[in-house]
Image 1: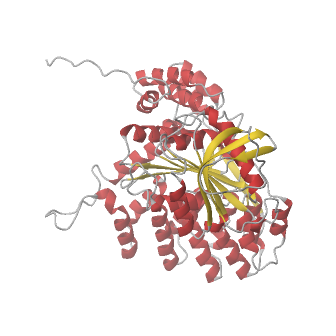
Image 2 (image 1 turned 180 degrees about the vertical axis):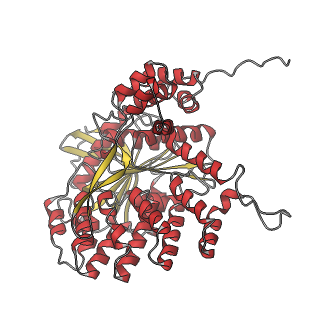
Image 3 (image 1 turned 60 degrees about the vertical axis):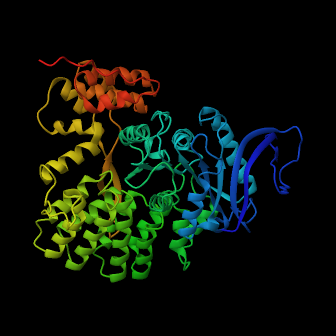
Length: 570
């Protein structure tokens, strides 16, 4: 990247339309900002911008750029998180497409007082550079992760997605203020060489955000410590986050013109640039209605370069068995990418094909795609138990290559420490067997929702009321390969019912008390209230609910309970 590189610049504002930059160092002039001696400092910041950018007023989507705001840990330099972002962009060939700004907190740590300065920095940047407002992102470490979570969800009309490391966040809007599917998307990373308090806080945040229903990829890496320079997660996290477009801002007229120009040789490249639901619809139409195999192949590839809606990805079940070889190949690649991005439909299509294949070679490709999707989960957080279940089934497959693929994928789980020079046989199963292991990771991923597993049987009283409060499945309107509209089940659910859950909780039912605490903590069906969350988590914990006890220990401002006194030996 050719850069204008300046550190520790105090952005100073005299009025909403009049500002200046003050700094120490080499001469620097910004003619768009008024040089006024009485201006007020808003925030210290650092930035890097590509050379040769178009004017800030440009409306051409191809000449606009994205904005990445970087937030350091407390007591670290302002630009601390710029370099891992810069290097990741360089590795991915994206250097000229983003302005990067590091922002310093108003106090030692980021908090509510930083929200308005951040908004002003965004406004200032948009006046200086051709930034597309649908492409504004956050990247934070520690306290920077906290502000990325809290500012992002409270300013979803500004922030599209974020990558966070080493800390969590607590303040999020109630569903009545911001529906979970309109919140920014989060790629959250935890290094297992980090501090214990950081490990506990990030895991606590994940349990709450998972229950909230936010779009989230969560990774744990054994080799990562307290810093965020980590090419594996930097590239995957930024590569995923930057493909999002703001869920609350629609395309501009210029972007819609690109979507309408379906005879352009770069049509699906432009579709991916625009992104969002309208672009996803164009992909879906290209997959389901076009008779041109090259057009279908280009449409199939597009969803590996953008975040596609589940309604579009559901159509890939047909193109996986398309008569054209290139369409099938592009489909398989895109499904692998989206399965890794945790698309429910991409994962389901691949799993279904492995179970009922049309072609043996394509089946191997589908198995490999699923292996790619869980490559970071095998030694980390198993967010997708259904894929692991598929590999466990493949251990008994009739095809030797399929068995070998499954055995190699699962090897770190069944015997992580094995080496050929240890003088012992390799374990073929984890302790307790595969069924017990799979049930454990499924329950852990389900979190509080695991308590609804009992609802499939006969229930009564408080338990029945609790089950009635479970969120209902959503439905998707999907186009078939012939262009006919069908209704498909969404693999995600609507939020749980607050009143039903509260009624069951007041009857003393521990799972309902635990879930009610989570609903108060997350603002699901009610305004966020950690004091009430603590009350109900305490009631559930007193009845032995383990998850409630864990979340109770991390309630903001709450001191951990002292350990019980030692008991005299009998």
